[in-house]
Image (cartoon, rainbow, N blue to C red; front, side, top):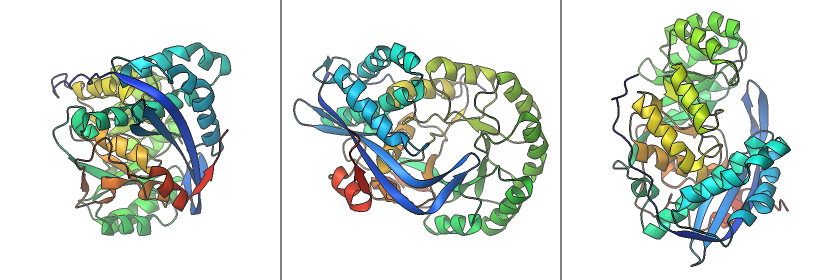
Length: 393
């Protein structure tokens, strides 16, 4: 890790913002093929879209992480309406979204402890922050990547969420759609994982970037025993081999013996926690999820620290199209050699709303000059056309 590996990111722009109305909209799409991870199965695809409107009637869109458990979508939307909206509606934030993010984080800190819900609270705030940054960029008449100081709109990406069932077919379908990098879910037993890896390498060729995600499946002993068997496949990284709450000493022991780079960060929350993760020197790839914690206001300093430490920043994301667009703009603004995560599984709440990220060309997408994140003009209409709308109140 080289402190001089990357230039400092610019400071987040500041502009006054007054929030007139904040709304959360819940949608569900019942999938035909469930999405499997080592810890659970998704039988539908929920989404919580945040609509933030200012005094002039301008609107920004964000998204709240709500994958597990499926019933959590409605709960997070209720948190937005009952807890978050009263804290910001009618208020002016002279320094813009970051000031609002700090106010919400500070204003709900004790409640998050008292309720035992720091995660859902932080996720609701993250989605609001994404909506406010979309709104701020729209008011400035700029795409968000440029509003944040980015210079390059073309970014690489990888096909993610490749399930243990039908892995080869999924990877080949994604390659036909323009993808050149892939990530397989593992943690379903060594023999099955290795058979899938062998099939993917044979189908995709040695030149294709291939990574694996264990979704916290293994103990330290299991990870140490499994890693040597993964080494021959030339993997770009091994993601979350251990539970995210295991002590850094275990991760450091794993890293000392790892024959391939380690990745993680989607289940880390808070600046101090990310600082500890970076200081532990275990990850080569850092993957904060801006819809799960921090939005852009919180993740921006984390990305800056990660890049300064020589880490590869690859935003984690596995949800609807609004959060995907925000993650794409954040990666484009941050620069570096990271890749955007694109879910391989059926989810029209992603595909119908994903804008420029749907146009894959030789493993890359090019963000356009539409203001904000470039969400479609009728977000709610499109969402209602492909999924069931649910009133969370």
